[in-house]
Amino acid sequence: MSQRLRNRYENVDLTPGQGKTSAALSVSLGLLSLLAAVCFIWPELFTTPDFRGFYNLDVLRTSLHISIAIGFGCGLLSMMRHESIRYGVLGMLLATLAALIGSGKIEAPDINTRGLYVGLDYFILTLIVLALIFIPLERLFSKERAQKVFRPGWITDLKYFMFSHLGLQLISFFTIIPVQVLLHESTTWELQKWVAAQPIWLQFIAILLVVDFGTYWIHRAMHEVPALWKIHAVHHSTTHMDWLASSRLHVLEILTNRLVGYLPIFVLGFAPSAVYAYLVFISFHAIFIHANLRLRFPVLRWILATPEFHHWHHSSEEAAIDKNYAGFLPIYDVIFRTTYMPGPLASTYGTVNDPIPAGIIGQFLYPFKCWLQKPKHQPNS
Image (cartoon, rainbow, N blue to C red):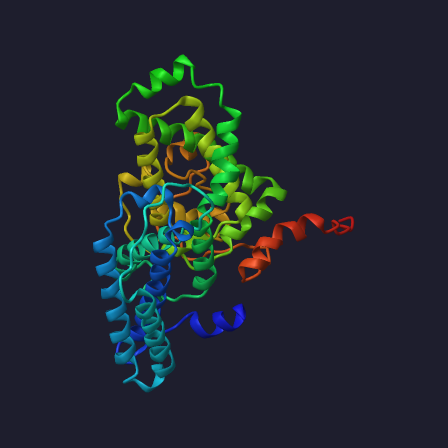
């Protein structure tokens, strides 16, 4: 099924006039509207507790109705083009179903509990916001001009994006909670009080310095320790760089990075506002450095990681392999002599000797299969 989806919906040409663009919008908006209507009906199961207090239901309800109308209209428009009749009908059906579920008086009740939930609202909102930001940017400032919006591998990357957002509570359970339990008696440290008393902007910079130092070495270990590379190779398996490629991370790597990131944050006792600012920044920045952008940022690229810097990290060119490990601060690569920033921009991506499967299930199982395989006998040279 997944292979069929990839064959049919990847590397799709959205040249205007064929009806494919309106069909894609219709299906996308129809599906997102349907998921949003589900959030209204069962908010206790499908909305994120931390977000519920910020929602304006009137605005969200109006946005839902507008999305349904646009999705239905785009589907009708695409039907006028013979090549896109099926997708136009599908988009209209999804929009109609969303309208049926969302018709009448939708009221999201007040929920004061923090039970099990799936962050469907988080997935919908972030996908819409990021798509509205990065798709136009990548069209205007494309590094690879021929690369399509629905390029090869986007379906797999969208599944990763969905998992990381829908599984927010599950990921937190295996990262934040263990760290909090481990450090539950450290809240009286004088160092924590001193750190929390510093200006928020200074705490933000300190979090970047401290966390990126740890993640630099974890990232480097992921490349230089063969067993760990089998995990990280999944992230490097993408051969097309864009904003969605940042989501392709094996679950073991997600848990490792979160643990490494949260540990110094809790140990040092940074103020919640500084931590929230940091989390918002890294979420956006991680997507930005993977984007298909040709912007060079001549001065900034030596202070903060840019697409140029990180694209070279993903390059499959021999000189670029195992370079540019820093997630945010290139200074660590400069200090430890792992920087690679030649004049041109990177152009080829992917792993060199690792046959990574195309689907998310195969990629999840890939490191485990590699670990369980018996090493092949190497003949004497």
